[in-house]
Length: 617
Image 1: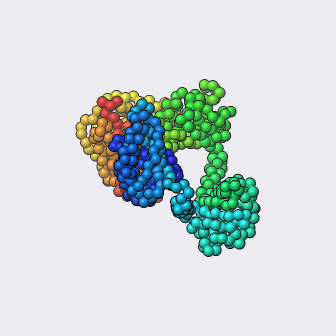
Image 2 (image 1 turned 120 degrees about the vertical axis):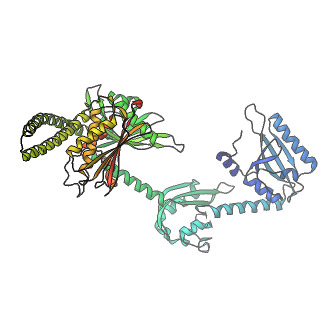
Image 3 (image 1 turned 30 degrees about the vertical axis):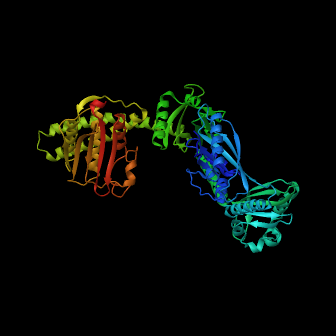
């Protein structure tokens, strides 16, 4: 079926000088599309044009000619061949002309003809009819003037080597800051004195009368009485019947905004390049259609490659096997959610295992008008040295933490022995001191466990020992232990009596213990800490709510980052290293759960974590 909404079809119709109509075969002679020349013809002939419902041509004919017209259309549709017909529109306002109609069927494989294209040409009854010729000329000039005046560009016509302004539209007059009276019929040099400074340009324009070649000047910088700016100028020679250039059509478009934007863009690109060079970052681009990766010079150096292009599969072969899934799933997730990604991974260079590097890459996808991702662009940074320092630091923390556990365990044993011995005496002072020492030893033990867990997490050596257990019982046990250690707070457990989960009980206990400890640390004495456990959408959700100092909104997204601590006058005196919540987040993530926080500054906070129910494991 013919696409009547096609921009290409509309452009063809619009630019055709002859009247053209497209009509359906059934019902016969119903016009479905036409051009401006046809509309002008019908209006001149006295018809009233009604789009998609027209019977103008037959109504202007005699009955005999109307029958011939219908018969010709039927013949064209049946034979699928062109045909012509000359008719005389006797009932029109132009009875002294004939119309020559040429019919062309729209062929669509073996299907019956549905549409016919008809072009129309007026033929004077007397080819020497001066009145008709003058009428056509006046109509053409009127059309030209209408187009000239309404054009959104600056336009003028310059006559002869003196460049006398013959026509000038409002846009170019505004640019020149002149009236028609000041320029029409006057040479450009006389009407516009500012051209004295642009003699090289004037000479090039005058040369068109000699060489007959059009001239285009991009980003022409001009100073006009109105403003300074950049323009694109087209100089088109107009020739007479002897092929001599007599006039020049000038079309000028103001592109100052585009040029300035391009300059700013180039400036921004230069600044970005300087920044990337300073940070030793490389850039890359993946064409998802061709599956080709394009690397910047710095990215080539990072990957130690000789070429700046490689296929996606070749790029994958550089990535360490254990990180391919992590990298590809991170990019897929970003594509699905249409957001950016930031991923660390390891690559192998010069063959598997020969040389390793740690890289961090960040980027995002870009989409076409149909919402399809067409390419991914981003930056890459070599973080090998930083990562090795981090690994050495974690190894050191793990070693020191492990070594500290031995004397700390011995101290705890000695304190417990002394507590047991002094319970048989009336020495209350010594018993109280030993109790306080024991509390501090427990705190120190928890702190060392935290550093040890960080080291294990970073090295990937932390393992989960999952079993089925009652989460509510574990919460009550943790709450009871903390009531002894934190007698200054009221700790209350709210919720059902049984919720079975499949998880590492010791590590989930550490998470609960950490959240209770944080709630007490950041709230006043004698305040309430409420622990609630409930099932929501296939997940067991635990919340720990306090009546503490609260957290500012801009600090919440970073609470679970390693070594992050909220900086405020209220927290300066509170001890901590910022590893507790980081460990909690890592443990919950390894259980395929979620952890988050809600808070109102000055009113308290609620920390949540959720775990899949035992049926979802």
